[in-house]
Length: 495
Image (cartoon, rainbow, N blue to C red; front, side):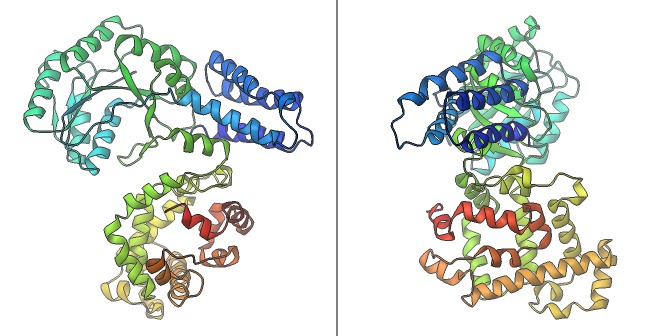
């Protein structure tokens, strides 16, 4: 993910500072200089970085620190606070309310992913109970309406646009009025892409803003834009009242520091980040958990819980827990759990929300070598099974002839089907122990919000080898669990 390298360098500088025996001004300066270099090389504007360094030095006065105080912690907290300040302008953006019509206008540069982000934004709110609608006013780019039409139809969101009308203001007014009559409570207006040299397009943007009177103007920021981000973002802010920023293409390999500059230029908070091309690869942005993950200071429990609840709604959880508490773990149960895991997004992204997890532990490689790809292949294999095979808790049912048939039906090698069955047996064994009170006592957790505990050795045995390798091996898992603390501490984070 973009900014991962930046986070690695900043957390590396902090670790090096923490390893010093005596913390003095030289150690502080060395640490800040390394962080400054990392930020500048990641395309954060020079003046923003200089201001951050000055502010940290004002806060951290080592000569005035009383004996017994942890200087390392003071420095770390000052760095954390300044990074949060850069990303947090101190004011909240407009939040749409259900049942009350809100108009949101999207603006940004050409190719920043504006049209795709409009649909993602609409789809996100649709899942939360809003009635969104999309209006395409981009008459400048060929195929813009077709793109929005295709995306909207896929997400089952009403849309409006025209192949013949050339006046974007007229299209916007007609679209907004139509959807207000249809009682849509979130009307999203997609505009033409532009840059600060195009005076005519900026004038058009102002006219659109005056005609539709949007409750919120969102600036779409391409994370790969580089040092130009500050000037471009400021030009948009001077033309219309930008109230929020969405950063796109956060799954790429660009440096991404320009996103920090865009926040400084618009004085508007980042509200979402786009992490891929698919509709669900769209996340709410929360400053403090993001900076903590960037610095390796801790995880994002709230984000992880949101992902879990979104992938598996609360009403489905008691039924699953009841099945597991009875030790009734079938291949169908495994199928459903893999589907739930895939809904949560890339495994590396989920692990990055755990406290103490280092993104560098996740191996880089081809898609075919990824755990996500392997899980998808498991689903295809299970699609080739019959009801008896999926619903039987007896793994011995899967003899050689059945395995050969499944391999042929799913287009997989026999060895891969056998590997999947081994993964199933490990999971079934783990849940069988859990239902009998060994390891994770699920039935107690249901009734008491319990305090079952699984140590690192048990976790290593329970996890499939491929997932254990993704984490970085048994040693990395033990280190991670040690940093996270006991499972009792973890469970308390969810209350």
